[in-house]
Length: 334
Image (cartoon, rainbow, N blue to C red):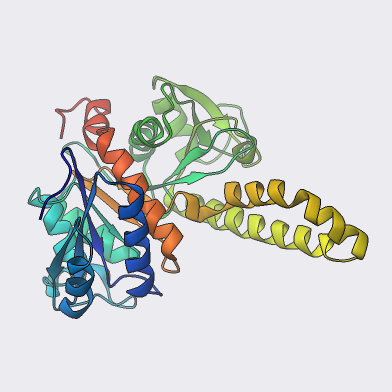
């Protein structure tokens, strides 16, 4: 097999997600078509990955015999199912055969496998899931969105640095502004966690102070830092509200003949708005702090989300995300 020089290799879990393997294969095909410098190691059952790889020049099959189901205990499944698509995908990153790994399977299993198999960057206390949110201006990075429900102030201080590195790598923001999510802007506001985290973050480059929930869609900062419980609530609320508002807007435009005429005129602008608010645009949430790239997608990821995830992963690899995070924490490059 031949492939272009300077390729970026992403291992992909063909068996993960509600619509796997069909949606995964469609997404991989779209990503390979869009990026000739992308190579995929497709991980999963032989009857799924081998025929697809045989028909796509820049795809190599990695056959496995086990699958970690969504309902299994993550750490136990990772330890017992060493030939599962998730564990093998992470092992490919650890061994240097892949630059990153993507799965739309069990979030807990991906996190456990990435931590246990790939390992953390030296000095990282807790890895964090980051996601990109639409705002009135440029998109922003929100973390943690679910990896750590309970946090210490020191974790949030590290999240800020890791999030800033991701904002630079994925969004091209050279000097990201960092905000600590709180119930008020004053330094003394909020829980003890928020107050202590504020003190630690005060010396961090780019720290803009506390922000409130309403500041996120306004695009006040480029990186929003919070604990995993709060971040996950914010993420799901914003996704649900965007979907609800778009639905209400569509219903209003279809409510009368006159409105339908207006809808036809506004169709291009409405399409652009829908795309801006679509969470599939950014495809996956990277687990920052791991000594290699690991990305997790929604269980309901369709082909577009999976193709976007591979695009985002390739961008992060080419921007040297892992080394950038290590450097931001004052460590040797990973």
